[in-house]
Image 1 (cartoon, one colour):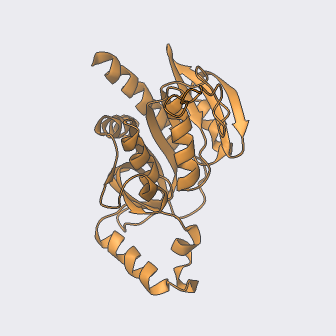
Image 2: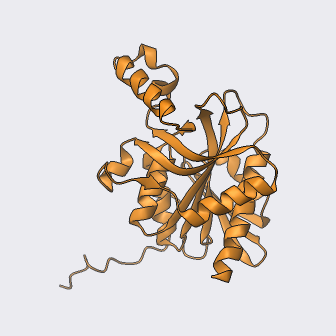
Length: 251
């Protein structure tokens, strides 16, 4: 009997995202909320829904003659890692996290954009890929294209670190947790260290992408209240992809 472990049979469609080869482009924007996928896709040309399963909704459209996709990841590291793994398996190689975050610095205003260049690994998923000493950093070309897109649109923005955690309520209501002292001390350290915003996916995205030898970055909107509109965030992220396409063609 032949050994099939080294060469597993090809899977026509990925199990969780229900997409196959040809369904997505090499560039994929990654919101957490499936409800935000159509909004981001509205800034693409000829975008259509290609799959919807569990927390994963995928639309694919075009920027000129280049196919670009949007796939929701759900909340947190585990579902983000699944999305990146399965998207990479069918041809995606550039990922941009597009989402909301809590602002952390007093000089920031609600609604500022944050180009995430690296992330605090205060989460567990990425530790199943690399030891904690391994940094969660974004690809420099992706960071630069995101920064240029923010500047071109005239939007207030910052470039720097995000804090990726596993527990939403451990951040927003730390005082009621048994580990309150540790949670509050850590938060104070992140703020003193200059971390700009807090979210739940960037560290996982960056580490998994590094392990898979793919590119990743993140664009967050930092908020202290519910957003009135996410259109500026989404439009800026799509413009960054347009800039990446041009950069890749010139390489």
